[in-house]
Image (cartoon, rainbow, N blue to C red):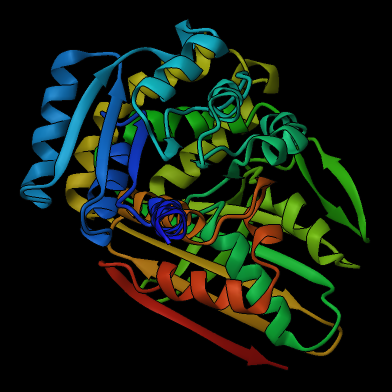
Length: 401
């Protein structure tokens, strides 16, 4: 009898261990996206513990204080390290010593880097990994770690932000609801005001102008070398009206199109406010050689030069974010739109929701959102969470012939 009781207690402890409040380490946690991730994790998951990781101790102190103003009494701390200066083994050791259940990586930009944080998460046997990556080269390197993640018991999701991320899942939902073979796929995004995350997002945008856009044309993946930065016309967004959109190499233009097996073409673009910024960017792309944009000296330098101007204009235009995805068949179009009052919060909340969903519903391996949520019930669950976060101002789907 005693032996049976001991076994029962051991099994009970093992079964509930995974249900304990998670301990999540946020790489890039002292940045504006990082604190948005932390706040949402702590507000959504009672008892969750968050470690904000970053290079600067003073920034870490301020980040912890910022998070605590919105999540009073929460368990949040700072860990000082620069992941770029550490080996995979050393980084894995840090993850083990911090006894983390999940690692969230928002320390972009991801251009020209290897998936060291993912590698270390797998090495350490971390249960869940999520990042906000977007370059296709990074994604391809990361997905090659799939078998290692399976063996380690790590559930990893890439591109787990707003766009890419939520947009990928909404595209699959639209294609499924369409009820016919998808032909064309169009992603359109709009942001005004970056909530203090300006420099990083400006860098990411600039780097994107340096290469082509991998997309589907006539059912085949192609590299449209001169497409980024070109005018895609005006798109209608919820509560914002018609806004200018220009092409940018979002990875979902390739990965979601491939997942859905579209027979026509895909394209992705974004716009911003004030309108003059769109014209200036298109003009710069037309003048500056493409290879310059891939040079950090130029792209990072331009971002640093532009940031004060962006801060000034942000104060006048306010902060908002919207996305529109159009999936069409030969006879009809399914349109899904979503809007949020804050770009940085939407990104942070989305990443936090993907992380929490994988903690509750693990699926080992390395995944993109569109493949991870192809199952109708899993997709319904995550769509409900992503489109009901605080600050969401619109979400709707409509079909037209």
